[in-house]
Amino acid sequence: MRRILAPVIALGILLAACLPIGHAHAGPATAAQTAQVTAALPAAPPRPSIVDARLGIHPDKTRFVLEVSESVAFRVGTAADPYRVIVDLPDLPWTGAGTPAPGRGLVTRWVQAPAESGGLRLVLETKGPVQVRESYLIPARDGHRPRLVIDLVGVGPEAFTATPAPAAAKPAPAPVQQVPVQHAPPPPAPVQPAALPAQPPPARMVPAAVPAPPSVPVPRVAERPTVVIDPGHGGEDPGAIGVGGVHEKEITLAVARELRRQLEASGRYRVLLTRDKDVFIRLRERVGIARDVGADLFISLHADSIASGSVRGLSIYTLSDTASDREAEMLAAKENRVDAIAGLDLSGESDLVASILINLAQRDTLNHSRRFAKTVLDNLRNDVTLLPSKPHRQAGFAVLTAPDVPSVLVEMGYLSSPQDSNQLNSPQHRERLARGVARAIDAHFKWLGGGRKL
Image 1: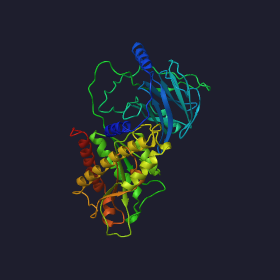
Image 2: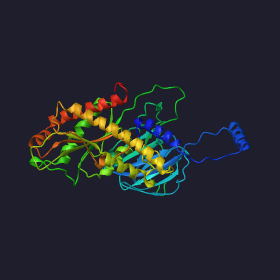
Image 3: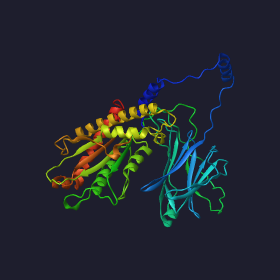
Image 4: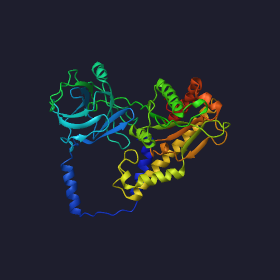
């Protein structure tokens, strides 16, 4: 999931390879024959295919993810009567083709059918009118295969008919080590949907293509790191209620939006919020959102409250060693190994090998988390009051448990303190606080890039 984990995982695989294993023996004649056949008949390159498809429910959208063996061209569009989303792909083999799949969220079900162009068409039948908020292809990286991601949001019938076709879907930025593909939009002629049982009208198609890799070299470009900001609490969970009746969930969302504004203004980061409105999200789902988008950094924002009104100041938490060990033990269980670290499937590995790889990845992530926490405090101490006694702390917060995403939880102050409460209610203070965290993020990724200018 993250480029900084790649060398750690490679080291783990090398160590695991040194473990005692059984040996299969073959006679000299068999080996020679195999070598002869291999030399005479080189293997044909594998044909691109669909590996998996899944639907995910997020607080503000339904996400459709299609995992493919190689980057492919695709087109996305919407249609009415009945409402549906149509995805056109090349002719990809898939064992699940032809079988309707149950839906989740805004999607009632989805089916596969041949497209008029001879490729494969996926039809996502929806509960009502929807818009494609975003669609992009994440290239293969850090153990993940390429993934086509389509985010859907519900709209009213008027908004559906009045909304112009969304912009062309875009691929996610490629890692520094990879040569990015060039983008050439498909022909402008609209794609007509294949005939469905109800004979619906043609879909409004959105061109979004990722063609085959270019035949000429292209310059390498740096990937924009993905930063996920998590405003704590929300919905029926107000969090701490401070002096003057202020709710923690309101403060955390206000600071998260300000931090996102500053980071996006720099143009150096892709920034996502786990929630952008007053909704409730489970703790593990917040972690899942970060892992799902391949986050390079996860920052959870909170504001504490205690009985004493004299205690004030900002503190920052990273995962404790005890909680880290418990999480590693849980991830090493066979039912959790498929996507335990950086998209690697460890289900076929022994308990010992799985534990080694998970522990190595987790230790590396924890070290980066602790270093980033120190960087945050160094960049805030001149602008924000820090908790006098040990502002960097460790705990077993659930939002810090991602084994492959450096994560911190920032307690921005005490709402039980009149001074802290008044400051956190001030837009000027929130801007100053966000500016310090943004400086720390810049310093963190500059260090990761070996001094590379962001």
